[in-house]
Amino acid sequence: MGKRYSVAVVPGDGTGPEVIAEGVKVLDAAAAKAGFAIDYDYFPLGGDHYLAKGELLSPDTVARLSGADAIYLGAIGHPDVKPGILEKGILLELRFQLDQYINLRPVRLYEGVSTPLRDKGPEDIDFVVVRENTEGLYAGAGGCLKRGTADEVAVQESINTRKGVERCIRFAFDYCRRRNRRKKLTLCGKTNVLTYAFDLWQRVFDEVAAEYPDITTDYANVDAICMWMVKNPEWFDVIVTDNMFGDIITDLGAMIQGGMGIAAGGNINPGGVSMFEPIGGSAPKYTGQGKINPLAAVLAGQLMLETLGEQQAAGWIEAAVQRVLRHDIKDVAAGRMGMTTSQVGDRVVAYLLQG
Image: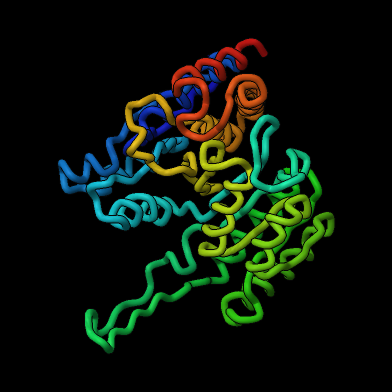
């Protein structure tokens, strides 16, 4: 047996444990075939834990998570917990404390998956969004004055540091070079209105671009990006953008690649521990019914192995997922797959072992 990896697993809420179970099943099969091992350490973070213990994310938990090679997350979100508490107290806090400054979102349409875009196929929808993940409007700067009165004032500030912007842009250029597809990097911003923040983004982008003469660059306002992702998704290879715009356009990306049931992403710290997750939420109405599609969680595991350097095993997983989508699943939406959650996981493993 070769290398061993320690993976912190956060199954989370709702259907999170169900999809993570299938993801672990696939990861173990890929690891055994490739000759490495994965040791799992499970953490009960999420709504049930918060309701029972009143705890979101303790310093001891953060310390243990930071010692793992990667974090594998199911979903966070509970119908009995007010929106924002779990998201800010767990998800955003982990990103900030572990300095996961890149959100990496592949947007790829696989054969056998329907897209709402007319006349577009897998050859047209294959790009990646690199989103800054620890600054911008999500940094939490601002406040409220005279709350609840007619004179109430709410201020939410977008924080953009040169360090934060530059390291995100450099990651995007390096990723675009490694991806080696069209070698085109697009900056998504709003320079005509958000003149301070995106003047910084544009200047840094132009300066760093000079160090990458092999990469073609362009710029588009975020509203134009949204239009072109629908009209001409084939134009894009890698897009880099700030936290807020990235949050918006990646959800649009998930829809054009077939929906949340197939979308996966990573919260990346290139020098530390990164966290990988399916993009869809906890979907509590499907809990325990075996109706939820686990392929987004499986692809999150694939992205995790790719980031850890296990390229061959990651490739096996993606190829197996493609075969399932091509031959077995009727629809990627929950309850319309024609198979149960565990049956989908079993089919991925079967194809993976077949080679």
